Each structure stands twice: as C-alpha cells, then as structure tokens.
Length: 134
Image (tube, rainbow, N blue to C red; front, side, top):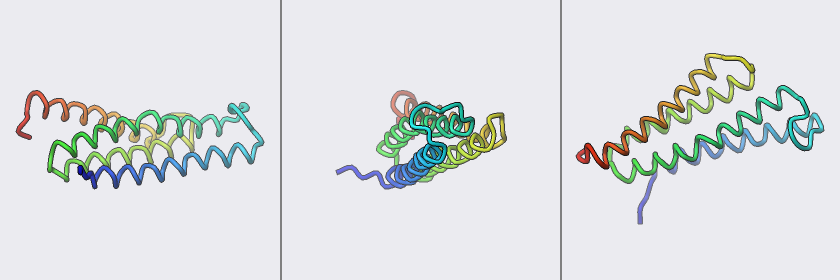
C-alpha cells in the first residue's frame, strides 16, 4: 500500500478551502436571487472566477505533489510545495474577492500557483530523466 501523508494533508486542506469557496458562490447567489450565470453582479463574477480558478489549478498541482511524494523521501520539499499552493490559493481568492483589479494578494497568489505548478513539473521530470538520484 502506498501512503501519501503529506499530499493527503494538503489535499484535505485544499478541499476545505474549496468547500468554503463553493459556499461563497452559493450564498451570494441566494442572497441576490441569481439562479444561473452571474446576473451582471460584479462580486458574483469575481467569486465565480475564484472558485473556477481554484478548480482549474489545484487538481494538477496535487497530482504533481503526489508524484513527487511517491518518488522522494524529502518531506520538507513536499511540504514546501504544499504550503506554497495553499498560501497561493488563499491569497488569490482574497485578492480577487476584494477587487477586480490587480492586488498584491492576487499577484502573489498567482505567482505562488504558477511557481508551484512549474517547479513541480520540472522537478518530477528531472527526477525521472536527468537527476534520478534526487
């Protein structure tokens, strides 16, 4: 049996964040009586995008995190990327919820997400083809 305790921890944290983001969309829809779409509501447009953006990036990052955990015993590295994606998604969600423009939270959150996705992909490829001794 393969156990992935670090990835399981971050997947669970991120799932709770996703549930919170889902609740935000549902509650705002109900309060504004918007059944489908965004009804032209600017705040709803933003929280829908926060929710969607989370759903677009997090699964792939978690998959790459799990692959890394299977291939290395360096838990500090796995925790580092788990923290990076978690903090990044929280910052991005907050930054986009408070403003449709560029906020430092949104920019930092996007940067953390792109960095974790790109670095995990490169590290996993490196371990497989170029640096199998890592």
